[in-house]
Length: 200
Image (cartoon, rainbow, N blue to C red):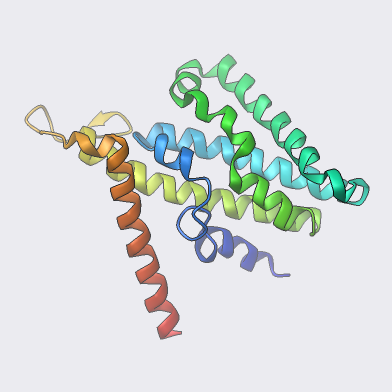
């Protein structure tokens, strides 16, 4: 199995947000600012990569009948590490991510990759898959959060872009704005993919 293909699948061909439509809850909730989106992405990448590695390592001794509870225990361990780290060293980010941080435990991306990939493949392939899926998740969240923050707040990374005269369109930092931006982004992304597929 080519590692470049695994990586490309995670970022483009099988992007968890834009193609698979999984992990949407946190993607819609934390994209009000780029800072929050990148913090959540970093947490998801860490948990995804580490849990993929461990699950791939223990697949030979994991009874098939209880694999899902074992996956959840492994994932929950790494989520707890992330929570404790952020609570100790970055309390503002920990507070801004709120309930969506512990909900990484049941994030469909992580559990799905554990079941569909890590449980069936080698450790390094599982590592690459975790990185690819994590980067795909990060790409989607970064684009959506950038648009929402710029239009909805008139800022980027908390830095004002347009001055005091700018009138932000506040709907874009509210839940309907998340759906609008994500829907448009998915449409454009899939249009570009389909045109590229026709050319190839």
